[in-house]
Image 1 (cartoon, rainbow, N blue to C red):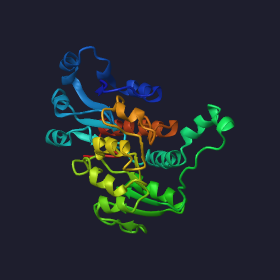
Image 2 (cartoon, one colour; image 1 turned 90 degrees about the horizontal axis):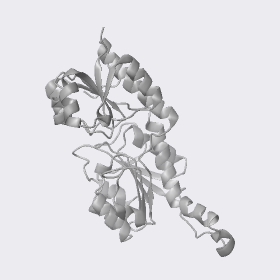
Image 3 (cartoon, helix red, strand yellow; image 1 turned 120 degrees about the horizontal axis):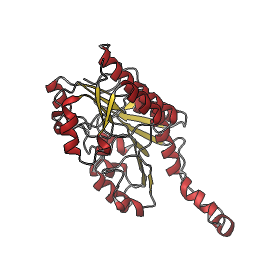
Image 4 (spheres, one colour; image 1 turned 60 degrees about the horizontal axis):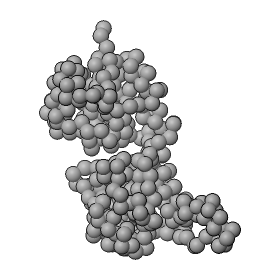
Length: 314
């Protein structure tokens, strides 16, 4: 039996690329010199698309693959996939939830600590010789016992909250509705959540409803002593409003793993001392990336063998 044709939108580690090529005829759109010509040639044969969470699988791409059956996303976020177009054509969509939850939550907490205790600047203080010539590093901020807000109490939000309890923090959350069995204070409104938070974690799924939900009003409520930590998607934050708040110090700082237009981020971020910048690598451990790849491949295999999909979106 002929191998199914799968359109690949970007690179994968060798531990995924090898098994993918063994099971499927893989077609690398990201390596095509002429994308349009490549799709005209390959598109009619494509039955599956392998995409990262940051890739765009829009209506035009879907229509260029008239025999498309499944989009397998390597990541928890699938906001780049046009779900409406997929539903209209009966295309299945899968993602890789759960396997990256702990690493994303770990990085969020690490970012909070790094920004509050100014770890990057403190290391520079040592390396530059300032410790020897100027004495002790300027005082930083305590995390333990502070107030935390978690905006979006899904898998990752819950994992963040569990970790924050270890710091004795006063934790509240905001979601569409109170969560059953959750012993945390509920705030129905993001502005109210921000108003009582020293550290505001954004752990929302990217949807039309969460677009720029952290905007000027939320940032104003967070205030000059508040810190924003975004480990969700860039679209959940009004980046222009955030930059203004950082530049005017109307919030204390931000720790960010996601950006509009990444990896080419707004140059204004580069001049700011009150922001911690990370290269969208919250899930970037060997263990998690191997698990993500295995789950993506399991979804493809299940589809093409007629088995139930392990983690369907639609």
